[in-house]
Length: 89
Image 1 (spheres, one colour):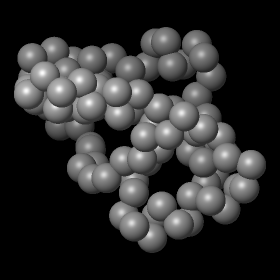
Image 2 (cartoon, rainbow, N blue to C red):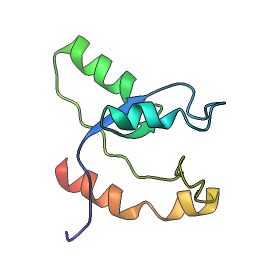
Image 3 (cartoon, one colour):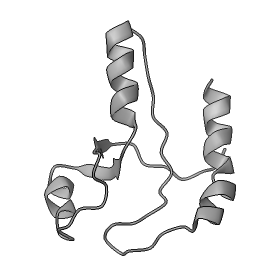
Image 4 (spheres, rainbow, N blue to C red):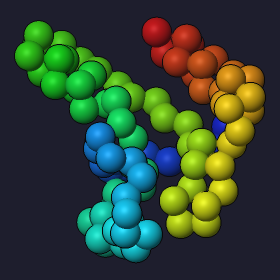
């Protein structure tokens, strides 16, 4: 599909926004590419039921630079990720 992507470790956390703005450095040291809040449940349920799971993530907020998409942009700009997901399914 000609899209750019990264494959690697992610951190699932219920506290995406940390009080320490430098906390990301420890996770980067361990090769963590991103922090998200939902994939943990997906993988836990897949393991429980003995099935496979895959998380596709699209970056909306950059914790290092502070860049973020507006809620309107998040609702309308993730089409490519959805097309990848549908083609995989």
